[in-house]
Structures are given as structure tokens and as C-alpha cells.
Picture: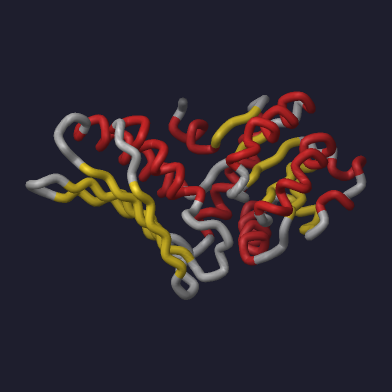
Length: 222
């Protein structure tokens, strides 16, 4: 497998290191993915960690030109139907996720199960996330995903709080409060490495799937 990284910021560098550790060829890392020659792109998986604006501008080119794509960029939920359609029509596998950390996916599973148990017992949910000051979207895509899971499984839409502090890689908490107790589930990332490793896992999975998939569904076997 060959990989081209779209976006060469902090996450791009972490993905590069994860690829090197696994002996996977990195063809290049580019801030202008649309400039990659088609004959090169068609042999490569694109791993995208850019900005919402950049991905909105680039997704049609990625779908049309690349062998497959892994997208960790968030902030494009409002056009997800158009994005998914572009990849489906091009026949290009897409694995996307609000978070590629396996630990966060375990949090997703735990939140869903907790909601199933608590449903109808008077619990009020709340989601809180903390990220570094450089993160552009707030609340984070991960926090929004947790909120949607809670709304679906518990039948209550939670409020979502977002804080931007220093260089915090990412902390996500789901809280369930009743008159008699409080239940809290938290995932705290120590670095961005877990996100990068998961993105490489996803890139490897593109070789055995077709169509559009959310990473957590592949990990949880849905």
C-alpha cells in the first residue's frame, strides 16, 4: 500500500511517523492535494487531516483521483450526503471518522450501552470536550458524535460544552446526572499518536472494503 497525506500539520507529521513505524510507503505529504498527478494518485490512499474549508474544496478531486481515502477532518457534516455520493459514484472507498482513536471508539460503545441501561430512569446527559487552542471547530466532531449516540439511545439531546486550553490533545466526557447519582465516562488522549495509528489502521482497511464507512462501525463490527 502507498499513501499520500493531505495536510502536513501536526497530525500529518504524526501520520507520517506511524506509517514509518509500520513500513508503509509514504509517497508524499502535500498541502495541495489537487496538484498530485492523477497517475500517482490512483495508486495511493489519501489520508486527509486538513481543515473543513480545505476538505470541502478538495473532496471531489480526492474521490475522482485516488485509490481510496481516509478522512479525519471534521466540520463538514452539513454536506456529508454530497461527499458520500461523490465517493460512491467514483467507486472510491472512503473511511471517515470524527475520531480514529480505538479508545474513543470504545467510549462510543460504552456510552451507547450506558444509555440503553439508563433509558427511562430520569437521567440528564451532558457532553464536555477539551482541546488545544489551535482546533478550529467547536464543539469537536467527536463530541457531536457522542451527542448523537446519546440522543439516539437515550432519547434525550444533550448539551455539549467545548473548551480550548493550551495544547490538550483531546478529552471527551459523557455525564449522566440523576437526583440520586452521577455517572461519568471519560476518554483522555495523551497525544495525537492514537489518532494517527487509527488512521493508518483505516488506510489498511480500505484494501478490503468498498463504499463509504464510518471507522467506528468497522471497528465495532456494525
